[in-house]
Length: 342
Ligand SMILES: Nc1ncnc2c1ncn2[C@@H]1O[C@H](COP(=O)(O)OP(=O)(O)OP(=O)(O)O)[C@@H](O)[C@H]1O
Ligand SMILES: [Mg+2]
Image 1 (cartoon, rainbow, N blue to C red):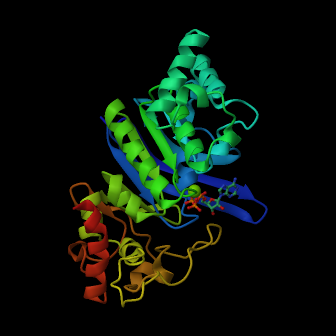
Image 2 (tube, rainbow, N blue to C red; image 1 turned 30 degrees about the horizontal axis):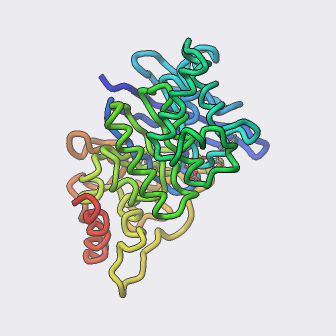
């Protein structure tokens, strides 16, 4: 059984402008020791989806189920959730300062985190904090443990946050754009670190990113979100070689470096829709180059293309990877992803 089974998750917010339907019936599984990548343009509901699992979306109306190790996270009391959060499910956010308190020493924060969940002495927890900082690659961890967050560089803060997330050997780590704020070298190091740690602790990992390169580097399964829905779910290889949904194809074609040197990138035309006034039928239809009559009226359900590959599109299922108007552009897009996959 999957470690995490999310079924038909819906999340909406009542605002003065109307009901924002941020997540509209999303289902996915995360297996132990595996990485699920979630991609999609800004505002597609990636963060809301995962923060809801942790009980962090205040004031939202939530539906569906999210069974973690057989227990529904969405019906837990806040006391129960607090015990799960940190200890069994850890989160790493884009901005380390949102997890590190600026006025307390880094090591002290890790020690407190450990002692809030486990009965260990202060010296033992401190030794563990140093060990963790060392593990995530903080040089001279034994002395840097007493630094304040502002004394760390951005990359070091990100590592410290990862150390904190790992302090209790969580079974599931949720990393929401963990590298966006970092330069390319540090980004690669953090990705590498996350991968090694996942393998070492056999944790499951959910990684949220705009960056298909990160997906190509580390995801086993990929969930593509558009306007609050899962539009495609596939293993990484299938996603890059044989995407079915035109939105996924569009994302692949807009990867920097996907087009040849002399080719222009092909960004997906238009903007994602307002989540208050969604288009009729398929929410992607106004931007889709394959739009058909039924797309304007019928919401496509996720259908099985092949075992483990699902797509929410009315196009015939045998059109995987073939949908591009321009075959050479499609090819180059796939190549950019493939280079990384090998
Ligand atoms: N508390 C809230 N009240 C109202 N709307 C919200 C709230 N939180 C999020 N939303 C809306 O929900 C939608 C999904 O937001 P979310 O943060 O999940 O997007 P995202 O996919 O993570 O985007 P990004 O890539 O920019 O991080 C957005 O339209 C956002 O404005
Ligand atoms: Mg987000």
